[in-house]
Length: 204
Image (cartoon, rainbow, N blue to C red; front, side, top):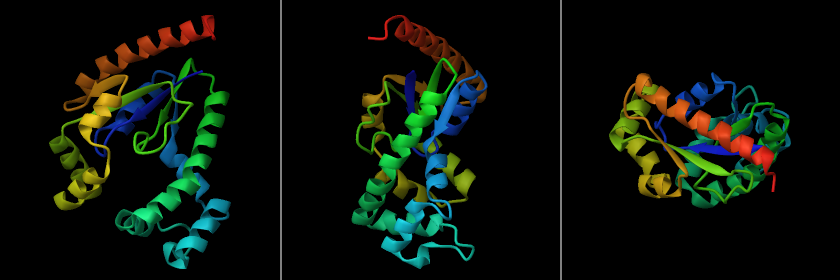
């Protein structure tokens, strides 16, 4: 199975790109969604998080207060590293499980922090969704009703745009409209289909 790692900075348009691949019959595995499932009430990972951070990271209904946890780890690198060490292996195992059970010709793993974490051996190509920093800021402000300062602070914690582009095997430019995005998706989709077919013919 050809597994493409889809990543990009906040507000670059990863979700929109993922949806366009889904519309072409491709399995998209969402690492953030897996993380939410792993930290749902009753899950062992949530119990470990509460043990480490205390009950203040829980909402009244027992669910994880993601906003509060984000604020804690945003300001505290050791806490962020602890959380990543707990969740990343679990997320990777689930991505692998979903990829192996996929029936589409190839699949895409949407991993926002793909380049901020240790290399994932399952990922065979890296697809970066790129947008200008100004576009990223505008989109996140509109989506999350966040201040410009908040968005810029988040951008500073992520891999730089230059490093992300340098690590990419494939790049989608998303500074414009959906009309400009679709031809790029089509071109990559056909390319990935060919790569997948070649892998099946030559598995070694």
